[in-house]
Image (cartoon, rainbow, N blue to C red; front, side, top):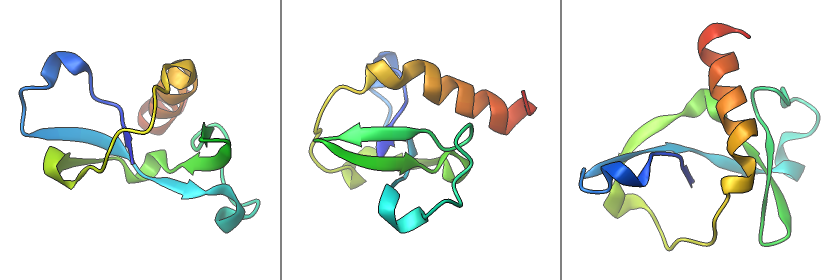
Length: 85
């Protein structure tokens, strides 16, 4: 899971996440603009933006890194999903 909610809302019980899927499981079916590739500990994952969800923070595992370098790609994917541009 990729937690995309701002840290300003850390006091909320829930957070917004984008599920991740190993890139080798998706084949060539992923729409790259909607589903950017995210590297986690050297492995490629596809962000399944269309499956965005709000979940209880207790359902999250341990944090594995800072993925702010993908900020533009994630925001572009959210914009594409919502507005088509």
